[in-house]
Length: 112
Image: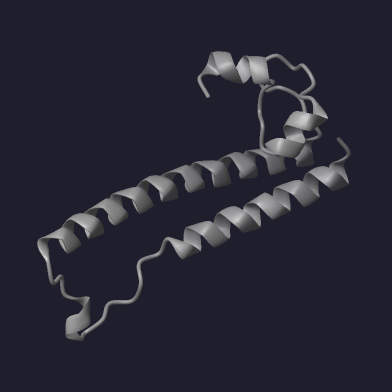
């Protein structure tokens, strides 16, 4: 994959992740009574939503860190090469997962 296409893909993914993280920020606190829980089920729903959002935020931060590592590899001239074996990562994989660090087979062994 050429460097310009890689930059484009990584920039697009960085924007997506940063936008998604921003969307997960809690809404501003409200002083009126409509922000108070009115039912026990509301508390359960709020807890579920908070836990789900925390999990999503963690996943998104991991993706952002991986994107940053991929951008660094791009600068260093090692983008598109497995960090494990040094084998080329197929362009099809990089199109789907621009921050990929390993081939599909290596990633499967690695655990992801």
